[in-house]
Image (cartoon, rainbow over all chains, first blue to last red; front, side, top):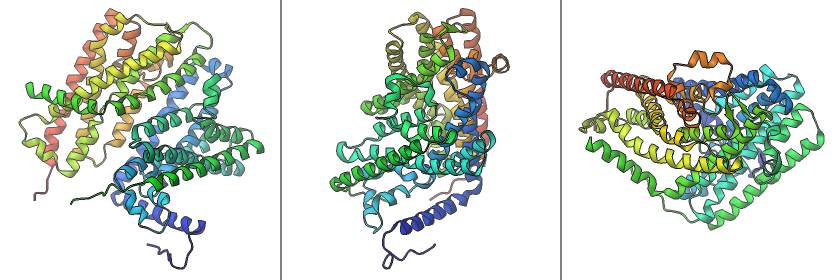
Length: 275
Length: 260
């Protein structure tokens, strides 16, 4: 394992990127201990995601004029699924601990991460990696390459927005999980709202109108995190590019801020593990 | 029989202890119904109905299919973990069939979840489409096939769990099974919304007699279809559970549990 010398290195971005890379390698190595199970889960998840595309393809075949009337074509569906799946996969594969953050807080496992010099939230996020999420990540690229116009700029934009959207999903999870510091176990609340976010993120924006559309750009900001990237990849617009980037960064900073406030209120539950 | 009923009662009691969390988790159905109300409007594109399904009927249809889907208990995970860590040995010592134990433990929880989820779904469907209702006598008449669909679903999940005797991970099998439910099980839209060849091919597949059949009869009752479909449901339940029992008895010969 690559050693990180914390005495000489400051906790810079470079330090965290190196630490992140170390954790990713560690997680993959441990997951690959059972190679058959690893590949079964990855390919199983790819097949799982393909099924949704088949569902949409069958509906498109029967309702071409209905979709055309709304200005939705099959490529819209493919692109939104590609971004949604890959960003969801990237977040869960690298920072899977954020999905488990409520449990980490209420069972006192946060104590372990508080003892280390590195950032507590970072360590909590990298404490878990979902094997099947690698399948989601790969799936997004596969359908992007197969169905959408392919060039250097489009792949670059696609990769950029996957990273941005994964930061968006992580921010939503951190924010929802931080509620636990204030009201106690918020696992169900977090899961309900996060699942709703994912659900909205996998249907084209053009389906929605009225107050729901406003909600999607405000309280459940899927519009900022997913729909605007889809618009930018389809027809590049520098203003929307910056709106999406800035709004995601603001949401991320806000979620860390709320987590920090909650951490000050945190009291250990004196977790005891009996073996 | 008493012990199985008591297990079902215990599972209801355990589950309803945290009723607040349970009700909160059902709120996700509200979002699903809202999303699909827009999708159904797009599909119908201003028309009154498609394949005799009107907009309100579609939303009630979705409320029933989602209530069946959201009430599932992932017994295959429990079975897989029991086989992996050897705690299946403790179950074998009990004077109760392993498969019946899991059915009884899950069924109480599933029935309660499904009924409450369906009620919440109906309330949302009622509000979303301007307080329109369906004929609730159809729903009442369809309760046997709704619970038949639940039992068929549970039988398949237990069958998937039995594969843990042969392979390390059963999750990928479950995901593929779930996708069959999503597409040919008519979870989101009735099968009439797909190309006709889909209904032709999958007419006698078991997935058709889960969510799709139960929901269709609840909104568009047809006695002949009901009786034929119900018989096919019972046949598949017996077939799937027999296969699960066969895999279990063969699988037990492969299990070696470390003592101490």
